[in-house]
Length: 574
Ligand SMILES: Cc1cc2nc3c(=O)[nH]c(=O)nc-3n(C[C@H](O)[C@H](O)[C@H](O)COP(=O)(O)OP(=O)(O)OC[C@H]3O[C@@H](n4cnc5c(N)ncnc54)[C@H](O)[C@@H]3O)c2cc1C
Image 1 (tube, rainbow, N blue to C red):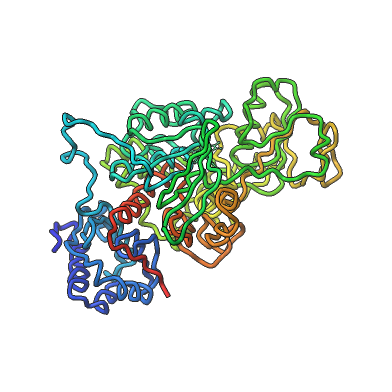
Image 2: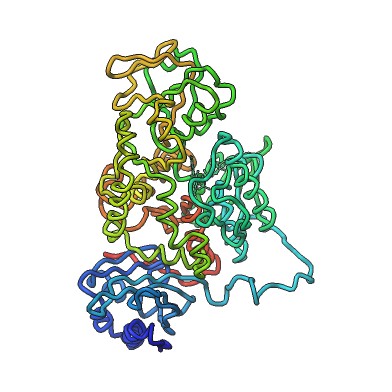
């Protein structure tokens, strides 16, 4: 029974009715509490999966299959949203765990959105706060001979997940091909800063210090990751490569051959998490004449920075984030730089990104008591089907208010778009993981001609000293930078494990929008991310800091439940 205050009364009444229906096993009654257009996004609480059920019929089927074992109870409104008491945060228990969530009621008092999310497993709570250990007993951090979980990739995603698993007592090893944690950032070009603000980027357990700049530099992030690994006492094998990985169906375990310091060893984890960066391997187009080109050529991921390029002619192929950053940096170092834009890009001013995030991730949000965890939960409460209706008006407003900015870009020949569904950076990030630029200054350099632009053309071939374009024009070049993005993640799986496993897993990322780069069918969740994949024992983790932070909790809980042999049954809709 919910404790109702005047503000939460409406929500509490709904939740009480829902709780009563579920408690008495009356699924029909529970379904009647959902409106005609309704969404139940479940994160492990009922389905042991990340799923969004759309419509009463699919909710009914899910409850029919899960209710008896989940045994939800103790539903309560924890906090009504201040602006409108028909939405708010909730908490409840299941047989196995403590959960949190969110409800939004439509005008008729029935639910439009329900989010249910597992927060911790009963009996396996993290030893934090009141549960912290005394520390005086001998500190025996004995590493298991064989890890239960092997995480390949120690970027922020791999390290954050390892920290969560450490807290949950799941034996875990992280391997990374770099020599030191953080090198994946240190080795990038010098001008790289995060494009998301600091409030959005905290890692689990250890928030960044509050004097950190809004946009941290790549070296700050590199050093942070190294310190994080040490403070969280993570077991990391550096300068280590995965040579091969095969799954032994009978044993339900992997055999992973690791090469480190000229030696090989075999690990036999039950679970392998790929946290190698969901962008995959660098994509370098095979251009005719590339082997004849006498100058320098490299992918953006290997770009050393602008030093040493003064007076040199550099052609940057591509027009997304990395291309813009690299062009601006080269220009500032005195290079003669040309950006080649084949197809349109979505550009959004940095200030607008800050405005989008401001209600949940900002100094003001913190002052209003919105913790990072609460912000992440509220962010998870928007079903992807409703995302365009919420996001599109904001993007339209930006297009209108920043029209002078976009006109200047257009006058320079730059091709801008706002995404196939008008959801700009939000939709593009989830469908393609790219296709946009958050403007930190390069757009003005394009508009005023400091960065030359060649738009709407493709490269036909390279010759000894330059680039020949599809319109017959030609540019002299001393260096070509391929800011041409990354290969699909299935290429990474095929390379690390096998083409068969890559095929079995299928596409990674995207939600089945049925738009360019993200074909249907509709999934309503990011494909294969942080949830069971079709390959037993294989998990994929990654994304920006916010995605990784939030979803590392969900992934860690799934692994912990399996480690403890809890009765995990993943619900599959028919
Ligand atoms: C200009 C620019 C600005 C950006 N701004 C932001 C931002 O503000 N916020 C944000 O969240 N993101 C930002 N990003 C994106 C950021 O790069 C990714 O979000 C982030 O790197 C993903 O982290 P990850 O841990 O998943 O993968 P990565 O950081 O790519 O880490 C993967 C790790 O896996 C290791 N690895 C890969 N393959 C193997 C293998 N076979 N064996 C062993 N180790 C392996 C690598 O060495 C690496 O350390 C930005 C990117 C660019 C280019």
